[in-house]
Image (cartoon, rainbow, N blue to C red; front, side, top):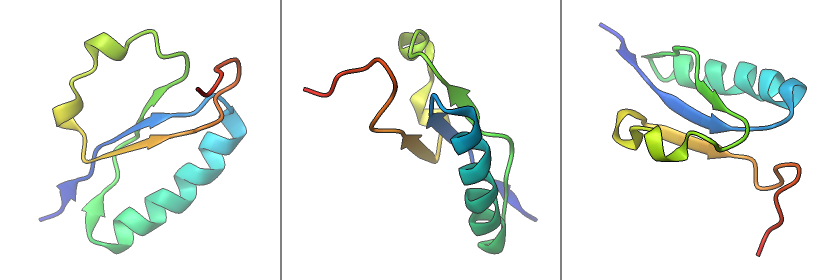
Length: 70
């Protein structure tokens, strides 16, 4: 029996998300987990509605376009 490994992913660059998803998928599956499609957040508008406890891993792009680091 394989277990789902749920990922919440913050990435604003579509090609970067697609490329990195392939790499992460391979790692997760090699560890024996199922890899359901990650929840992909782009603009952060839904932050208050996300049920964070449903996710096993959160991946965040630290250089989201238009967002200034403090």
